[in-house]
Amino acid sequence: MQRDFLMSQLKKNPNKQWDIVVIGGGATGLGIAVDAASRGYKTVLLEQSDFAKGTSSRSTKLVHGGVRYLAQGDVSLVLEALHERGLLRRNAPHLVKNQAFIIPSYDWWEGPFYNIGMKVYDMMAGRLGLGPSEKISREETLKAIPNLDENHLNGGVIYYDGQFDDSRLAINLAQTAVEHEAVVLNYMKVTNLLKDKNELVCGVEAHDEESGENHTIHSRVVINATGVFVDNILSMDDSNAPALVRPSQGIHFVLDKSFLQGDSAIMIPKTSDGRVLFAVPWHDKVVVGTTDTPLEPDYITLEPRALEEEIDFVLNTAAQYLKKDPQKKDVLSVFAGLRPLAAQQDSESQSTKEISRSHRLMVSLSGLITITGGKWTTYRKMAEDTVNKAWMVGGLSKRKCVTEHMPIHGYVKNTHFDSPGYFYGSDRSSINAMIQEEPSLGKRLHPNYEYTRVQVVWAVRYEMARTIEDFLSRRIRMLLLDARASMAMAQDVADIMARELKRDNTWIKDQVKDYQTLAQGYILS
Ligand SMILES: Cc1cc2nc3c(=O)[nH]c(=O)nc-3n(C[C@H](O)[C@H](O)[C@H](O)COP(=O)(O)OP(=O)(O)OC[C@H]3O[C@@H](n4cnc5c(N)ncnc54)[C@H](O)[C@@H]3O)c2cc1C
Image (cartoon, rainbow, N blue to C red):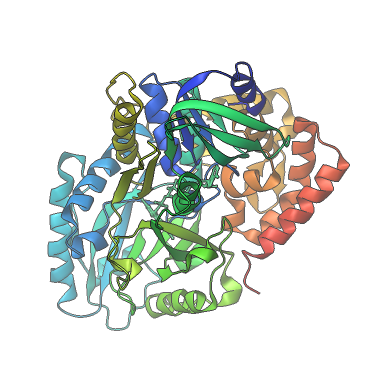
């Protein structure tokens, strides 16, 4: 997956008519590119920034059916998500882990109540279940989570769900799409839609954010998979198009592992605002979140920031359940993401936590296809539905979806999720071979972390990292795991990347400066 090579594919025949152009390189767009290319459609995907720069790198990192949606009675969504959870664990076993969750019970009725709920959840997963849930004693609960607040604790319920690394999966999906001959490009912003004499959409205009060049790309179908930005593309199609998305923000903290020892996660089923809150082990740290804060559409940005009240809410809720109350100074990183919820037309008063997480597929009069809503967990099914619509709309030959049992790039069985670099899956041996050849690449980027220089080189050569943020935030997850440590790595990373990308000292200086500014936004002072 090399940007220059992929760009040359686009440029070599500017009049070529592609079958499908996908706008947006998050979970939704990348899933569609994999589905379309693996069916044999000539596919291009354009992402304005880096892959997964938007919501898709800012999730709770769960591959789950959604216990909360079960409580809301959204049975079909839970059934679909549980099925997709099972498939994703099979198709990307190097990234999706079977994670034990414990619901602690402090009132006598909570244990039996949640036990019944989780049995229904297990039953719905059927053969793709990850393990049976059960009610556990107070002693067993504390053994699994030694840091849980013991006051009035009765016991708990243990259940199993999936846990993953969202932006790593996004990169692997991009690689999978390229292996099926798709052209996927980051830093290519769609600036306009092309229309034929019948006012039907027949391609896009795109701006290469690196070279400054503009490109015209002809296609039989154009798919708008831009998450919270779908309304921008819809207004390129029709300046009077009604808004489709109701954005809602969710934030997470990352804390040191000492706050949640053991391997189990905590699921708090009902917080004071009626949501669920998770504390989940992730890359030897703990991710705590999330919130559901409705926002005005003009707040939509690629770099949302946690609000003061969200920070207080997560800190206070976590403190109710943990022995050691986390303070602002303990937060290693804080990140925010925007849910691209598909608003129902009559839902002005509906709170965002009640809006269904199901996806919504829409075809405009011009033939533009828009997909919004959904979850990371269901990205494959969303893609299947979208491409089924695309061949009909574009008059393409009908071809069956083949992703249900298709391994994703990196696929390798029996992953040891504790070992460094596990997330490279089948690529790991090639990375180790590079260190054998050039031992200096095995040098660490930070004394406290096991990430090494070879990973920077690998990310540039094979994962299309173009900036130090691409590397530190989405190829490895340092920005989210420990923002201060990531700032300390920035200079080294910039030097290595500049050598690989043939950039000069000004580039290095600008990159480091921009990164320090960005990373400050992930630190609570
Ligand atoms: C706080 C939070 C927690 C979540 N937790 C989970 C979870 O644990 N499990 C789960 O299954 N789901 C979870 N989700 C949901 C999941 O993360 C999202 O449904 C999913 O990531 C949305 O992906 P997307 O591709 O639609 O949007 P995005 O990831 O935002 O991608 C859209 C992309 O389009 C690009 N774009 C926009 N305009 C243009 C343009 N003009 N040209 C080119 N590109 C453009 C953007 O740069 C962006 O990268 C969570 C969501 C949030 C907010």
